[in-house]
Image 1 (cartoon, helix red, strand yellow):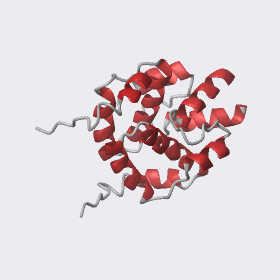
Image 2 (tube, rainbow over the protein chains, first blue to last red):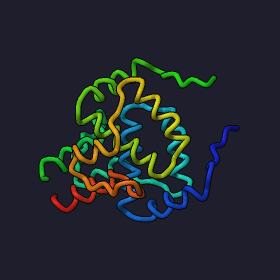
Image 3 (tube, each protein chain N blue to C red):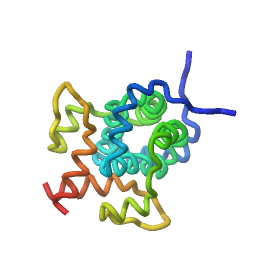
Length: 92
Length: 92
């Protein structure tokens, strides 16, 4: 069976610390959401285990609530990241 | 030689459209930046060709200027995405 292993646990110590913060988990969750929305299955197959091995991430639904971003429900054609970017821009 | 090929050009038509927008390129650039900051080399090796095949992305320096996010210069220990998340939160 295939098993993805971390190449360098030392380097990923930074990622581990990052994922132990709420902000960090949200950021990683936004990336996961992006990869899912665009069906980047290869990227997802690598990224998901790299991150999940360190910290399980929240769902898109959870994320959108936490961040107050509009979730279009079951469609999921727009990454939450795009909403965040637009919000950041409008308010800056 | 290794060559990463797109699994499904049909599915990635959505991504192509997305990357043809400025917002889309910025979002993809933020993800690339995250993967680079945390040295997620495996993810990067898959994501970068998947995206760059469709549209070359801007550098972190360019992105941080465009989005008005603080770039800590050469250190690059914090993903720009984190700054964006924090800005979005403060202002909402």
